[in-house]
Length: 568
Image (cartoon, rainbow, N blue to C red; front, side, top):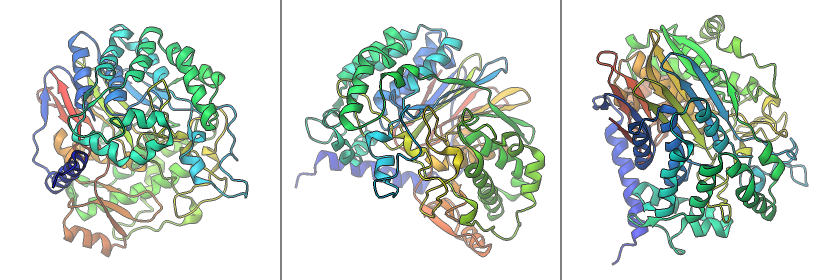
C-alpha cells in the first residue's frame, strides 16, 4: 500500500502536536540564549530574516518589519499584507509608543449589513464572504513604524520576502498540514486554489511553494512604499477582486487608509511596568485589569498550577472579560470608554472584593458576553543589541483570512469584519454580542483581543510577549507574565507551562490537556467551576532579559509547528 504524501505530512504534524502536549506542559526546559539580539516568530525562515537584518546594522523595528513581510510568504495562515495588526515599541531610552494598523470598515459598510432579507443574522455573510473583508492595514502600519524608527533602507527590509516568494521555499510539516486542513476554503476562488495547491494536488512536506504574483506585489511595495499597495496596480487588483465577488472596498477606501500612532496603555504589577496596546485592542486594558486584581493575592505562595492560583486567575478573567465586552471599541468612534477606571488600582480593589476565595462566581447572559474571535493570528518579539524592543501581533482573522487570494496579486485578504458585533442588543450563549461600542460603521476599526506587551523592571527592559489565539490571547499573555514575575520561570518554562482560559460566558474554565493534576481539577470542580478540556492554547513567542547576566532568553512556543528563535 502506498501512503499518500499529503496524508503522511498531515499525520506527522498531528503526532508531533500530541507528543508536545504530553511532554512540554511543565517546567524544566532550557531557553535558547543570545548575548546581543534575538527575534522569535512562528516561522524559522522569518526569524532568520530578522536576525540577518540586525546583523547588517538594523534595529528592532527593522527586524520586525522584515520578519513580518517574510511571514506573509512563509506563514500565510496569519502572516499578511492583506490584514492588519498592532505594534508596541519600547526604545532603549525607555520611551514608548504603539502603532495601530487594524483594518477598517469600507465607506459603504453599515451596522445592518449582516442581516438578511428575512431580518435574520447571516453568519456566512459576516464571516465567510467578500463582504467580510476590511481595508488592510499591515503595509501602511509597518511603513509608519519604520519611517519613524528604522535605520536600514525600506527596500532592504522587503527584499528577503520577495526572494522567498519568487524562488520559493520548502513546505514544512506544519504548513503542509495547515494547507490541507484549509483546502476547502481555497475553493472560494480559482486564484486561491492556484496559489495553495501544487498543480491541483495538496502540497506535501518538501515540495516547493513558489508565489510569483506575491513576489511582484512585494516588489511594488519595496519600490513605492504604501503607494505600491494602496494605489496603482495592486489597488486595481484588489478592487477588481472585490467587484467580482461582491465586496465593498473601492479605490477611495484604499487611498484613505491611515494607520494610527497611539500612546500605550500602562499599568504596574508588583513593581513592574506593563506597556501594552490601547483600544481598539481590548488586550492591554483587560490584561492590566486582571493583573491589578491578582496583585491582591499571593500567587507565588500558592504555586504555579495550584487550584488556588487557577481559581484566582479564572475569577479575575471572568470579571475583566465582562468589562471588555461592555465597554470597549474603536476610540475614534466610542469616546466614553472608561479606560482609566478599568485599569485603576481602586477599581481592581473593588473587583477583588467580589471574588470568593472558595467559590466560583456566576456569569449571567443578561450582563453580556464576548464575541468569539478566530484563533489564527501570529505574534513576533524582537530585541536588538541596544535593547530596543518590539512586540508585534498581526492577523487575517480566520486561518488564511477570507480564503480569497487577489488574482494577479498573490496575497490573501482578511475577513476581519467578522469581529464587529453583528446585531445591536442581541446577545446569545453561542457567542453573539450586542453591545453598541463595537457595531459596524464606515471607517471604524473592529475590536480585537491582540495583546502585544512589553514589561519593565526597575526602568529596564525585562520581557516582550504576545500570542495568537483569538479570545484566548489576553489570558495567554497574562499567564506568561505571571510565570516570569510570580513564579520566576525562565522564558522557555514560562511558554511551556499549562494554560487556562475563562471569558465570562460560556461560564467555564478551558484547560490544556495534561497540564494540571487530577487532584487540582477536582478541587476546582468542588469550588463550582465548570471545566472544559482543550488541546492547546495560543502560541506565545517571548523574550526575557536575564536580570543576572543581561542575556536574552527566548521562549519558543511549539504548540503550533514552525516557531523558532534566531539571534547572536
